[in-house]
Length: 351
Image 1 (cartoon, rainbow, N blue to C red):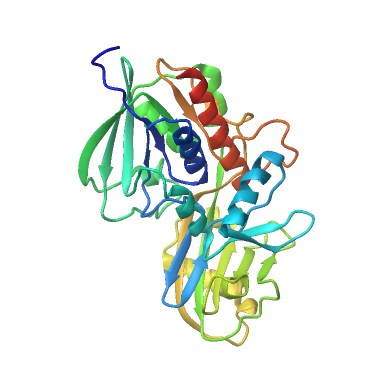
Image 2 (cartoon, rainbow, N blue to C red; image 1 turned 45 degrees about the vertical axis):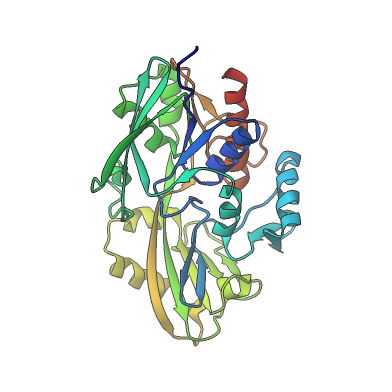
């Protein structure tokens, strides 16, 4: 319609799903704005630096199980962004310099706003009005039993943005919260399927050591029992991303859920005791704790994305959206990436 401004498509969440969706849309000529609440994009493909120590402390690697994802991985490998780490029959790929480096490469041609927390998504006649606040400090959830701890914030600068369509890649519990805050009502069946998606939390200790760890090559040890308190230990030095011995120690989902409400020092103390064998004779120079409230989807949405069927285009995507034909049927970087691409292609069809 003449004189009516064409608002951008807004993608909420700058993890691998949101980035792949945005790139698909931009390559098709669409204007896209990504809003992400973190200090940088990447989501759970997270890397932290402390002096000479570098830690991957979210996803440690990704695998390839589909020809569609293999095409992207081939391109990333040719660019020098990723390399094989270990593994058969499915190779484990790591990003050069840390997992967050890959998402930074993917974000380079995109318009991404960080430290921006969307607070509601309100319907308008020809699209959406998104309210958000910008924050200087990233909020870290301290308790697991809050309704939505990551929605508790110290309001900073408030603003809004209009969108002709929204693509939400935040976990479904957060997405439903934002939609409800805006007064949106989903069909009963859609609401039920989205509400059924559940995530396990994860508590991760980051240890900087003054010597060599006892983690065997290739720097990766997974517990044989899924209920063991320490589920995974990674030596980031052996992995090839850290200049100094640096361990990432992950607690299993149930242990993390049981201990999520404890203070950092108590959690660290217990995790260090459980994982002491992998420290070897080295001393701990520095220890940090990372809390992931939405770490691993334990129940899935049975499709690659969700079209909410509202008055203006609104779709959900992410690692928990898995096609029924997926043989693995578990959340991973591949499912997140392909979900974002599929949702973006759906938007291109309906806009």
